[in-house]
Image (tube, rainbow, N blue to C red):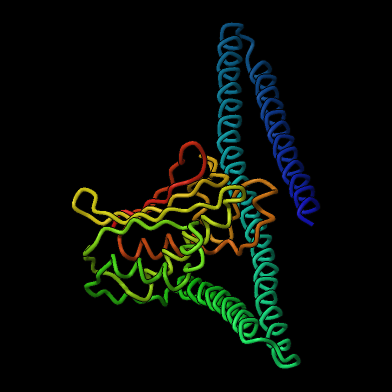
Length: 319
């Protein structure tokens, strides 16, 4: 459908430009014909060769002025027309991209909702139908709880994105122990990765900050999840919280596929998915980093993306 719209739009623009140029040619021809008739009248109105030569020269100058005027005004109008057309084309392209991103978002959210629900349902049905050992029951319940937690985080992200979009996100600042908040968030949501040695936390103690205790965990969760999601071969993530230039600095480092320099600002746009086909096949909704950026903006914190060495990314939040 987008190719068809582009073809129709291009054809319409081409037709308008050609019609405009043809109108300009006809106008110049009409002006020249009028001047030619005036020259003939001037030649018939007197027999003095000097006067005839003078009148014809004046009319020739008049003709050139009209041609310059028509071409000049026409060129300005054409440039304004082409500028307006380029704005319309850019708007159509942006709306088409947004529509495609929203479509992909809906498909992604539908899949991400179905997966934990189906997994939890299967594990609970297994518990009901079979008499299992206590250890296996505990494992199934743990798996079901993990899937529920995953579902909870997804719903939280969708609700947060909706609140941000409608400007309904109110900031409730209070004095916080940021060190404790980061540590407790990692322990609650990423304990398995901490136990497995895949997640390393370097949290300086007693860092105070005035922020929203309900919103800031979303920044940590989304950054850490994003780091693991795109670490295909070496899923090792490091979270650092320290004081830098007298202010708290949060860093999330990974050794994943990295982010191209040209996409480091785009990744914070809603529904944007970074990378090549391999990274786009990774599960995701495209709203996690959008939420992170908006929460940072509300706290007047600066978020930056740097390249890690030898590979990977570093997300820095300077409070």
